[in-house]
Length: 141
Image 1 (cartoon, rainbow, N blue to C red):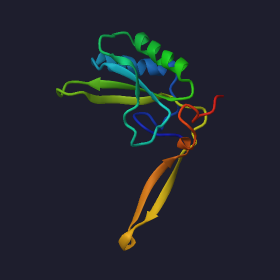
Image 2 (image 1 turned 45 degrees about the horizontal axis):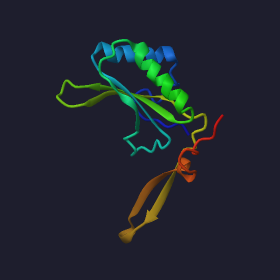
Image 3 (image 1 turned 90 degrees about the horizontal axis):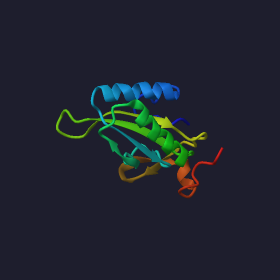
Image 4 (image 1 turned 180 degrees about the vertical axis):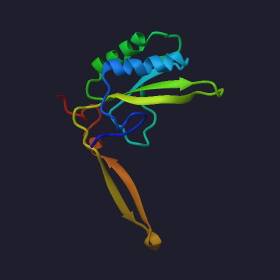
């Protein structure tokens, strides 16, 4: 099952050249970029681990792509996301966010149903990846 989060999530994975074009688009609008990673892409897990600090002063897409590639080397079996922030509204607003790397195998989610009082039904999602310990959730290729 392919995790679909952020912009472009229903498109095929971007090449580095296409990622660089999106970075250039963000930097042309003065949107600083940041890189994040996780091994738990649950839809409610919106706070991923940050790779370094947001890159406020970079103007060259190659610098951001370098950080993406360094994160890929350090975490080859994790999800990696690139974010761009727009501060025009006086607060940090995510203007662009998309996954730039995903594990080779994405196990997906299970929907758990619970019957409650008054014939009500509650649903929760359970990621199959969480059945393995942290750091071992995605097998190495």
